[in-house]
Each structure stands twice: as C-alpha cells, then as structure tokens.
Length: 160
Image (cartoon, rainbow, N blue to C red; front, side, top):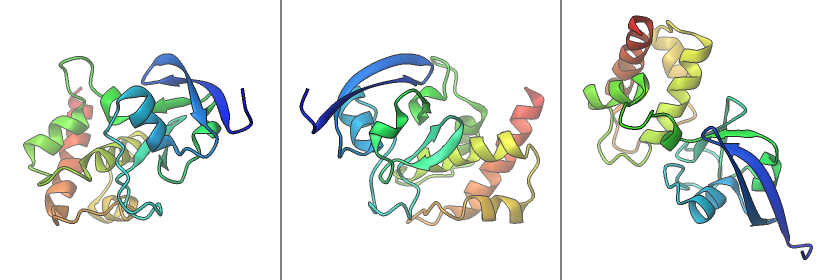
C-alpha cells in the first residue's frame, strides 16, 4: 500500500468494520464514501456548525475536522446507529414529536449532541441545553422546538 492510503479498523454503530482510506480523508467523507452513511453532513467545513457531528468513543466530534485515520480502533456512532431497527431512540422520537426540524440538514448533529448531553446530565435546564448545543447551528431557526425536544427526550428516557 502506498503512503497516501491506509487501512483502518473500527466499530461503526456496534459492528466491526475495515476500510481503506486516503490519509487526508476526514471522517465525514469516509462515512459517506465507504459506508453510505450520510447523516454526518459537511456544511461549513470548519467545525463551526455541528452538521457533521458523530460520536467517537462516546464523545461528540466534528467529522469534517477529524481525520478518519484517527478512528482506527475506536467506537464510532452515527445518527444511523441510534435507532434499533424500526424503533427510534428517545431523542429521535422527541425531535419528530416536537417538530424540531424544518429542512433537517442540522438535525442529526443536534440529535447526537442531545444524546451526549442526556448521557451526562439526564435533567438539564434550558440554560444548560442552550449552552451545550451552542456549537450546533440551525439555519431554519427551530431553536425553541429543539429545546422542547431535548426536554421531551429526557422525559422519554426516564419513562424508559
């Protein structure tokens, strides 16, 4: 293999995977090109909008700035891995029920950040929600609905 390519192995949404990547490729590119997962979307290309959010070892990262080579051996979670077959996660259900998206472009990133927030703080107040999600941008302006969705997701998790 030449110096411009590399084979990486990691867990993707609970399943072990192997893929050949260009050493320059970011995580969003590899998820789309190698695995057909388009929930992580590159928008700003600068790590400022949150549209490309994925979870690496349980921590949200910007896929557009994360070199794919660095997930070798890691556990990667995407929006596609949150549901269990036909059963949506509490976060996904809450975003739908609250109408917390319009165009939907930013929604996967917001949902993954919501999952991480609720994993860390099962009962955040509105200020904590707004602070935690401040790195994600919604160009449609559904912020009030997003806050409601985060609260509802927390309630759904508790009801379990």
